[in-house]
Each structure stands twice: as C-alpha cells, then as structure tokens.
Length: 457
Ligand SMILES: [Zn+2]
Image (tube, rainbow, N blue to C red; front, top):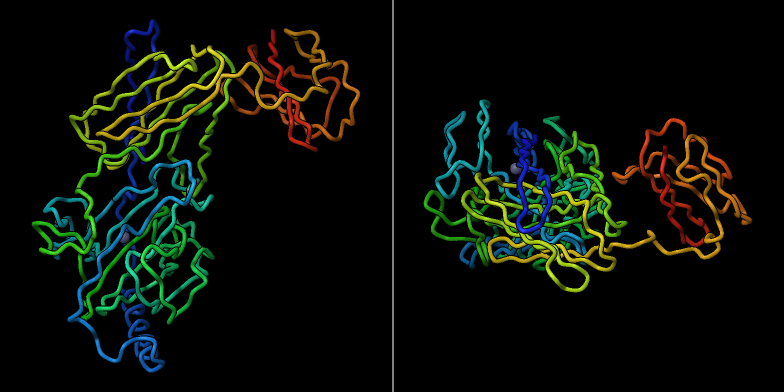
C-alpha cells in the first residue's frame, strides 16, 4: 500500500544533516467494487418501496418534482470541530464514464482516476477516503459525513461490521436522502452505530451530521462512497467536466487536483500512516520534547503535484527562524507524507513548525521543556542512584503511597519499554540496551508526573 522514498538532503544554512522520509499512500490499490450488483438492486427496490410509503404518509410530495432545480451540494466529508487535522479527505476514485471493461476507464475529466472490474463493475460514485491515519480517524470519530444537500431520509441501514479490509459481500451502513427535485444521494460505508438518530421520513438540512466515515460493506478501509441518482433513477456524476455533463451539482466544484496540506504534526517516532488493515495506526503525536531529543516534523498532503514545491520553517521560541527548507515534488500523488528528523532543537520554550504549500500555511506549536509534564513537587525529593546505572536502578526518598503511582520507562524514540502499575524502590533493568532513557513517575490520583533522565552503562 505504501511506497517509501528515502533520501538524504542537506539543510542550508543549518550545519547539520537531516533525514527525510515519507512517500506515497495509496488507497484501495486493488480496486475492489464498493457494492455488489445484487446489493445495489436490493437497495433500489427498498428505496422505491419506502418512497411509495412515504408518499402515502404525506412525508414526500405526491408527484416527482423533476422540474425543480437540482440540488447544489456542499462537500459531504468534514473534520469534526476542533480536530487536530486541517482536512481529512482525499479522492481515490470518481465515477467511471466508460461503460466498457475491464481497464476501460474515464472519469469526468477524461482522466483515469476511477476503476472498473473484469466482472463488469464500473465505479458509480465518488470515493473520499480519510487521510492521514485513516483508522485512527475512524477510531476517534474524526471524519464526519454530512448531508451534501437538504432532503428527506428515505432509507437508513445500520448495524453492519465496519472494519472491512476486502470484498466480503457484507451490506454497508448507509443513508439515502431524496432532495426536493426527486434526486437521491447515497452515503455508503458508514461506521456502525454512528448514524444520525433521525429515521426514514425525517428531513435533514444541508450540512447536517449523518454519520462517521467507516469501512462497512465491500471496502478496503474507511471512506465515503457518495453516489447520486436523478428523479428518473439515472446515475448522475455531480462533477462537471469534458467527459461528464455540463452541469456541476457542487456549489463549489473542487479542482481535479486539490493540492492541500491535510495535517501537520510533531512526532516522537518516525510516522507510519500505513497500517495493515484494520490495525489502528499509532501516530505518536507528541507536543512536548526534551532538549536535543528526537523530533519528527511531518506534513501530510493530498494531491501533491509533480513540479510543485513545499516549504517549511522551524521557528524558535524567541521568534527567530531556526531553519527554513524546501522540498520539490517529482511525482503526483493522491496522498503523501514527508517528514524530517531533528535532534538539535535545544532552546526551551514554544517552537513553531510551519508548513507551506500552494498558498496554504499551516502552523503547529510544540514545546522544548527541561522536564516533561507537570512537575510533582512531592517527587523532587527522589534520588536516583546510581545514575548512570548498570543493571539495577534504585530510587530513594519516596515516602508516599506506592499504589497511587505508576512508573513508565521510555527509550529515546519515545517507545515505552517498561510499564509498572505501582512504585518500586528498585528496578532490575538488565534487559535494556545501553543508552539514554526517561523514567516517568506518575501520580495516578492527579496525573501529575516527573520525568527523570537515566543512563544505562
Ligand atoms: Zn466507491
């Protein structure tokens, strides 16, 4: 799923070398169909049945209002409020306008960002996958599906398994909304139990919450499949283009490529936004570091474009620029990430990592601190001896209730190597390799903690 590119670049004018890592992230590389023919036929039957009964109940107009203006869509995926992501989606596939198969594809832009299969499936919707940290977003309900246009819910289906990684013939969790002109939008692959509490016959307004992006049904990872039909049940591609229609159903149709920074983070270990599906990624997003410890500054892009350049700055606590650098993209990727590693940031205080791309500027604050976290003054009496130590680490001067404390030891990559759920006066750390570690002593009653730097000889 992930192609990695590593190279060594020299940063000028800083007198150091910094390793860059990262590369492309590809969603649904195997192009599995989002929905089976049988399933689609079944859904269409249920939709017609529900429309009839809703008309009888007076919840839908008697006659199709196909003469009314078609809907005007807003984007149906957005980051939840106050999320740490600037954006959460990228597009893997548009509608396939070429009815031949296999490998006879044409999207609205007469390009090939769509797919078909040898069994005759031509992709009929727009797939918006969550990026970056797709399963982390899923787990934390970060990417919301909202109504692209106001309308009436005519079918809602929930309760299906939502962590699919392959074609499985499961049904998807989904919502279907009819607009005033009789057209219908399908929202598929939603997260189980996340769907709006509204039901069939209820109306929703534009932008109203419908559910969380998930991976229910035939799906290789969390994404929204957005499919639209007109009042005569003809498939509609909401995108206007040379190989589609002359009308865009979007209020503001995104460009074919929308180069964008979806997120920037600082990490304690080199980021790996790829997971073996459906494992939830561990992003190791950290915003507090000790001086000269390893810090990874990472930017996550959608539609990085060949021939464009991203630029970056690291700004010291006093506002002066520590370094600036740029990076040329020699490929076009639907989604990608690039990171740099630092071990020479020492000035105490709040730093800013700034990432610039295509006129967009995103800033992330992080701190260099002498002691990690809130200092617990009760713990300042503690002595660690010997330090450096050989095998046994001894802690003296502790006179509190041991069961109220926990001890964790991290290596200099930020990975936890020891975890104790109570306080110990003595720890046997023979098994650790030589080097620097951080012992974090946490008071479980109030979460205050103190971190000690320890050195194994
Ligand atoms: Zn799809």
